[in-house]
Image (cartoon, rainbow over all chains, first blue to last red; front, side, top):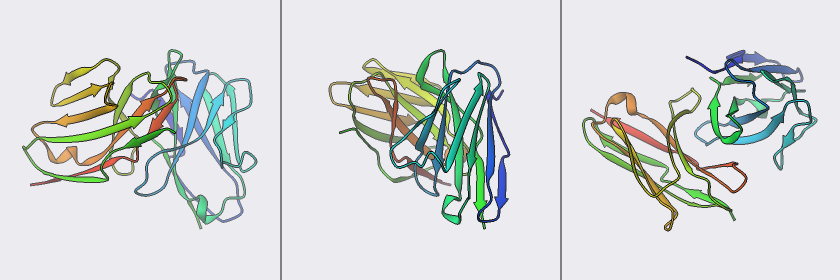
Length: 116
Length: 109
């Protein structure tokens, strides 16, 4: 069964609003979780590494004030897209590490964000 | 620099065999992953190689040559449901994944 869940699976919002996406590790207390973005016909792009109890580590070019990440517990990380614009429309996928190995990841089902 | 190369798209016939190649250059190496991703869905894990050689798992096999920085994914007895993108990812010295752009595999009847 699924080991990582995401909610919502899809969301449509108006430009300028904020959207929160939740990522839950269902079977494992994950110190580290990851947020990816994927545009159509492109590969995964790591946005940030979410660390429980501390600040997230953002990849170069990702605005930390726009993409707010909170990892308040070992089973939940949230990504908030603030003041969303149409160019933020994308497929957002989270994943969790496995037993301390950050390269062995289990992915959530993804969230399709459409900003009108 | 760090780089993963794989073909953008491949086409194969149902029932046939297809090999998807991947070459990598990363800072350090802790293994090579293959993921399958159907359109509109998240990637799912297929295989992991850290030692040279072939790992077989049912219809799918994955090969690694560390000296050549090369891997391939071999899919046998292709089925229509195998139509998907196949992502190659290398784990670097910090156990961070470096992702390829993915190979879109189209299966024709």
